[in-house]
Structure formats: structure tokens, C-alpha cells
Image (cartoon, rainbow, N blue to C red):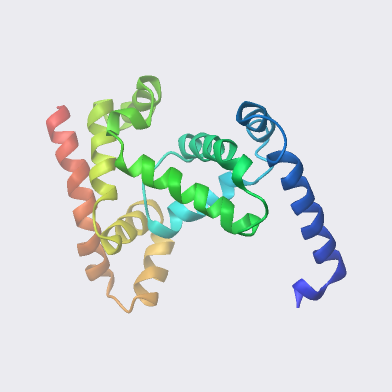
Length: 188
């Protein structure tokens, strides 16, 4: 097993020592300065995995900055318990909860919204609102929409894994599609 491998254990210990060095000295501002530039806590990967696992439409970079800020604010209270991975997951969960509860227009800056909305010929705020509405759909509908619209191979795999016909998967995906269709109609 990998956890019994001395090299894996040594790597984990080095990672824990690095995390202690990053998190346990200095003010929240100093901690933030150490963890933002290169994401040494690998929060981006945790966030991307959590978003994919929950089939959400959220900006990873926005969540990364929020999670890093939360880590820096809570760093002084962490003393190794819970384990670092669990502690980081808690910060990611806090960042996700905050992002899902905020006003859609606050999620991205106006220039970011315009960048994503323009190719879809949508009003930036309508796109942000549509994404927020999408994130409120039941998981099965979000998952189906993302698989059908963004990755046809995933749609076939997902249908088999969920023991659904492709038409049933498409029916589930339609709820997400309708949210964006309504936004497009109101933008024109």
C-alpha cells in the first residue's frame, strides 16, 4: 500500500512541515502573501474537484482567492487537528457556501462577466443570474446538463453509470438548458 511506502510517508511529512511553515507564522496578511502566488496548498485542485463532483457552475479562480483568504484568516487557530487535508477541505466548503449564497453579480467582476457572456450573446448579469439558478437545480439535472452540453463522451458514460437511457439523461439536462435559453431570450 502506498501509505506504507517510506518515500510516500516522507513526502507526506515534508508536505505537513511545509504547511506548518506556510500557515503557522505571521499575521493573516503574511500567511496570505505566502499562499496566494503559487497555491502551495493546492487549493485550486481541491476546488475544481469539488465543483466537478457537485456539478456546479462557479469560477474556480474566484473560489481559490476566497479559500486562500479563509485559510489565512483561520491559520492562527489551526494546530494540526484536524489533519491538514480535512482542514483545507473545510476552508473550501466555506468558500463554496459563501459563493453559492452571494448575489450573482458579485461572483465575477463586470469585465469577467462580459468576457464570458459576449460569445453567448448574453447580458453579463443575465449570465451570472442563470449560473446561480443553474446551481440551485437538483444535482441530477446539473450533472446531466454538464455531461450532455459540455462533454458528449461523459454523457454516454453517465447514462450507463446511472442506468439511464440517453433520452432520460437529455430530459434531465433540459432543465439546465431552459435556464440559459430564457436568459438568451431576455437578452435579445
